[in-house]
Every structure is written in C-alpha cells, then in structure tokens.
Image (cartoon, rainbow, N blue to C red; front, side, top):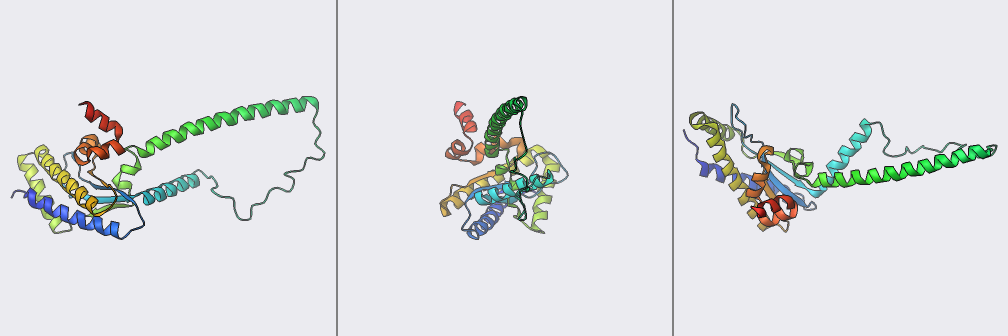
Length: 246
C-alpha cells in the first residue's frame, strides 16, 4: 500500500484551516502572529507521526512569559509584592543618639561612594542583560517561535482511525523505500500545507500570519521555504540577508 500524498495534503490543509480559523475567530481580542505545523521528527524512528497544529498570539505570549517569570521569582524565594500588612520598622527613621566621629563620617562617605559605584555597575549590567534578553526573546530559538511552548500548542489535525491509517502507510513506505526519501516527501507535503494555510488565513484576516513547519534541525531551510520574502525580512532579517547574498 502506497501513500496518496495529494489526498494527505488536502486532508491536512482542510483540517488545519478549520481548526486555526476556529481559534482565531473565537478570540477576536487577540493578535495572532504565527501558526505552525510541528511534532514530526526527521530522525529515523519506528513510526512516522501526524503533525500537530499550533497557534499563538502576542497577548498569550506576554501572559505566559509573565507567568514564567513569576514562577522563577517564587522558586528563588523572592517577594513579588509587599504583603498587605507590611510596615516599616518603628525605628527605621530614628537618628537620635547616633553621633558620628570624624573618622566614622569619612568611612561612611567612602562606603557611600562605593555604593554609588556599585549601583552604577549594577545598572550597566542590568541594561546589558535587558538588551540581551530582548534580542533572545525575538530570535527564532526563543519561546516566541517554539510551537511546543505556545498557548495553543497541540491541536490534533487527524483523529483515529484515520491518523493511524496515514501513519501506518507512511511507516510502511519508509520500510520499503527508505526513511530519507519518505520523510523528505512528507515534509514537502507539510510545506505545501503551510504555504496554502498562510495564504488562506491571511486572506481572511488583517494580520500577516507567519505560517511554517517547525523542526530545529532544519529551521532555517524550512523558514525560507514557508515564509514570504517580506516576512523573512521583517521577522528574521539576518536570515533574509543570507538568502539575498546567495
């Protein structure tokens, strides 16, 4: 038994479009920025899986990042907010009875200068760290572009028994004709689905949705095949420049 790749592409396209449209239409207050097909490994294994659909919005991304940051604060034992019953110590502002000698005052001045230097250094380091975090938060390998980290991350496009039938057919084909040619043909089908999904969704919405097939081992190649030149230049300018050079 072979694989009807045309039928598989159409089945995935119809299912992906229906599920994506339902999520987007069901959240009109959200600004969706990306849709991805993922969960299909290119490394040889016992079976070939059906892809999962993932979507994310800017609002969901910000909310999830804020939640993660709060959890990290809690793990480190840091207080996020002062408790409602928090009060300053009664003697916090009392200075009566404290007499500084000349040497003590000088020592205090020296420590103040050191504190100022320390604060300046802390501010510089914090600024550098913030810049690095900002760059990392936009890179392809950040959670912004990792479908498994998204709010809508694991939508099945095909349920059993149909999913098992397709999976078994591709697995059997790989056993007969080889893993590499089979998975390559499968990815060509997924790329075609992503391109069609991008065009159809963008025709229905004012947002320029980035739609792609996700796989870390072939990320750059897949992005260039799935995204338009305009999207590459906007979201991944360095990758776009490399393509222009070649």
